[in-house]
Image 1: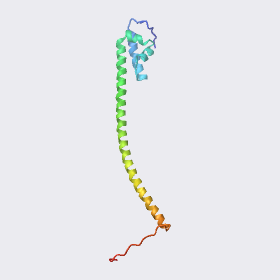
Image 2 (image 1 turned 90 degrees about the horizontal axis):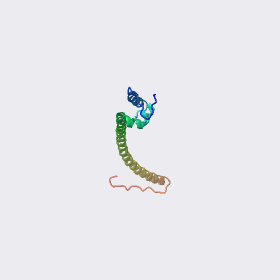
Image 3 (image 1 turned 135 degrees about the vertical axis):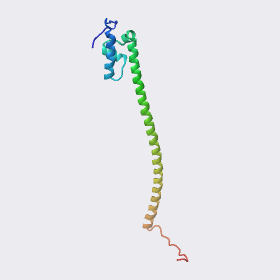
Image 4 (image 1 turned 120 degrees about the vertical axis):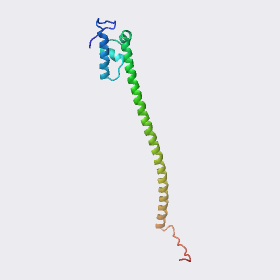
Amino acid sequence: MARHDDKGEHRKDGSMHGELLAAIDRVCRTDGSVTITAVAREVGVTPALIHNRYPDVASTIRGLAGRHKRDEMTALKSALEDERKKCGQLRAENGELFAELRTLASVNEGLRRQLAIEQDRGAARVVALHRRRTNAE
């Protein structure tokens, strides 16, 4: 990594520009997200040098960073939409389960009452009434 000072020390062959572009590539491969600060750190200069002396490089970096942010936002929006669909499905399933629970609670209460009556009969607290005989019998 070559070091350059902030005062704009330029090599006559214009290698700083090439070095900045190579640094952009290296930062993209290692970090994934490119910033002017990260590229400046990679080359050993300040971000101001890139902004002031190499506006085309700064523009390239901003474009890459913006594309990265847009891709991230698109992925997040897609994930959010998927989660909203799942949430809707879970809410519908929840509603069905609550309806089933109400039905089962009602059946359960009826069975508890019937059990109480049977237990009372068994304890001889309730006398079973005989059915009347009809003429048909």
